[in-house]
Length: 375
Ligand SMILES: *Cc1c(COP(=O)(O)O)cnc(C)c1O
Image 1 (tube, rainbow, N blue to C red):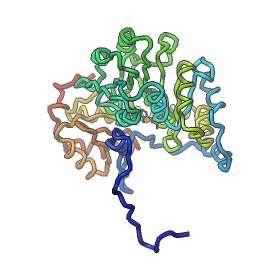
Image 2 (image 1 turned 90 degrees about the horizontal axis):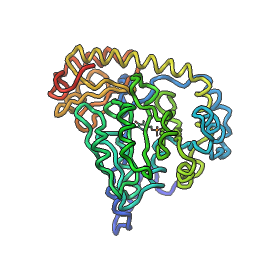
Image 3 (image 1 turned 120 degrees about the vertical axis):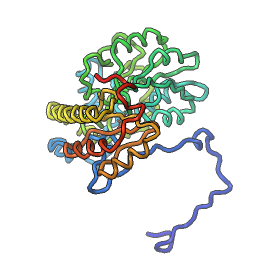
Image 4 (image 1 turned 45 degrees about the vertical axis):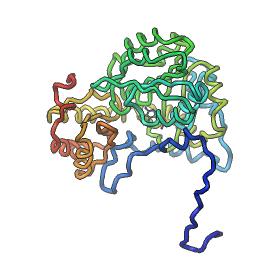
């Protein structure tokens, strides 16, 4: 069935324009990491390089995709509730943790309200805040990539409705420590929602790092956000979850798009939990590669933040475009984010190429050993 002659595209008239919400019309849509050429390594989206486990594929094949999914993801929530020692009602499952964050933002904030988060951090934050009509209050990170939690606490006022803390932080791969986080929470009003985004928690090996699950009983205003996209390798299926107070989860459920979490994704997530040991062994392998890359960059004279996610941050400053081009010429697609380059830990074969590319770069003021502490 065709509505236009073959090969022709009808122009849709754009004037006069319909009235859109001005704050939405002003937003820039989310930009993905670029697709990589066939023979290049795509290290631009923090994806897991491993293919799905056979058991995950087998479980997905059981899905009745002619039917709507069971929308509340009851079986998965039951499973996760048991793991976190909370009732299933204290778990909310969404089509990616980005969907969940959207739900919490919409539930807590709108025009005139403020949402505080570190910057630079996850690029989705300003966009999601923008959708709600609330105002982003971006608190600059330290030069070494860490959250400045004192400044974030100081940025909270009567209009603040939500604070996002990202640990490990995307793109700097730095953690917030447990001590820093508890000191921060002590300053946060008890009626202010705090979302701890732990998209990369499975990659953390620093024992000082905050782990939100341990603190849910201490801070009733805390929500922990997790995803199956990174360590569990299900980015393409879109599934994540949040843990926190039931009434806050109910508010998120109220604003959620119905039936957005597919049965395919729910089955894959449950099966991934069944096979977690295999998946965490992959994480350990990726962390070994991360260590090699970090050590290799240090040997080349780059002092970068000690990475705790499945990615590393090179603050290349004004050399960023050049750095991207050099990596690209070596078959490595990285992500330029403002004042630096984020490199995902991917296939083992990418490491040598990556370090060969880095050897062509000169450490800048930002990445020279004097700027940050090597540890
Ligand atoms: C990748 C990422 C997520 C996860 O997004 P999904 O929607 O679950 O795929 C969330 N937060 C941060 C900081 C991320 O980098």
